Image 1 (cartoon, rainbow, N blue to C red):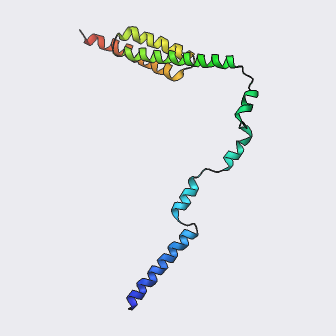
Image 2 (image 1 turned 90 degrees about the vertical axis):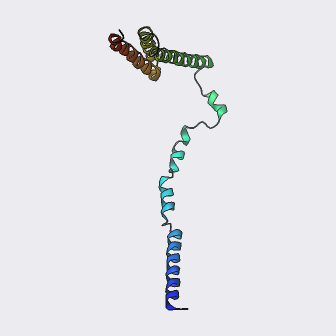
Length: 143
């Protein structure tokens, strides 16, 4: 064995010891990164008083009768239906009868917006305006 082999062996041992120290001491960068992105556990304990203990007691504490809940579900479903119809009419106005369907899409969009369906109502109004404006801007170039 020469001095060079002994030196390489000593360097390898030192590198191994250094890596072992970093791993055992928690200085490995992957472990530290994983600890930084984990969610703190106290959030779950803070929400504990607000959770229902069981589903059986949830009905006992409800002040809203079942009929009223069913009416609310029907109203939300009706509002979504009006919003989707308005969006369909506004999209159709881009291809056929831009003035008639565009104005209808705007009116139905306003109704959907007032009924609480803001996203579909706003898109319907915007598409209706685009269809009507495009029609009136492009009519002079047709003939």
